[in-house]
Each structure stands twice: as C-alpha cells, then as structure tokens.
Amino acid sequence: MAKQKDEWGLCKDCKWWQIEPDGSVENLTLGLCIDEKLQPFQLRVSGISGCNRFMNGKPARAKGSSDAPPSAEPVR
Ligand code: SF4
Image (cartoon, rainbow, N blue to C red):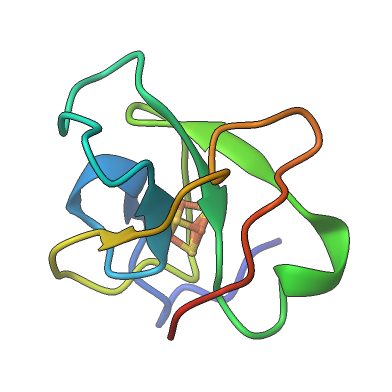
C-alpha cells in the first residue's frame, strides 16, 4: 500500500512536471517527471498522469521534455 500521508495529485498541477518551453498545461500534454527519486526512470507523463510524489506548483520548462525518451535535463 502507498503511504497514506503522501498526497496523490495530477502531473499538470505538480512542480516536478517538466514540459516543452511552449507547452500548454493540458490533460494530454506530455512531459518529463523530474522528481528527484523518479528521475532515473525518465518517466514521460501526461497532464492527467499522477502519483503520490506530487507537490503542488507550476511545471518546469525545457526543450526536449516531451521526446521519447526525454532528451531534456531536469531544470529543478
Ligand atoms: S509523476 Fe508524480 S512527481 Fe512526477 S510530475 Fe507527475 S505527479 Fe509530479
């Protein structure tokens, strides 16, 4: 079971979501998850993906964040 004290939330509302510089914050926009513990997995996630590492905030932006696999470095 997931730890209940962790708050689950959507990538589009998470500060660890990194999208293209001109990307819009929408359900089907793809971006790289730059949460420190998830960075090794190069997770490419959509706006309506989510997890319990969620932290409320604005997305980061960098070119290559939506590539498969993502080619952008984490900017946070
Ligand atoms: S996978 Fe989790 S930590 Fe990463 S951007 Fe989405 S909600 Fe945030």
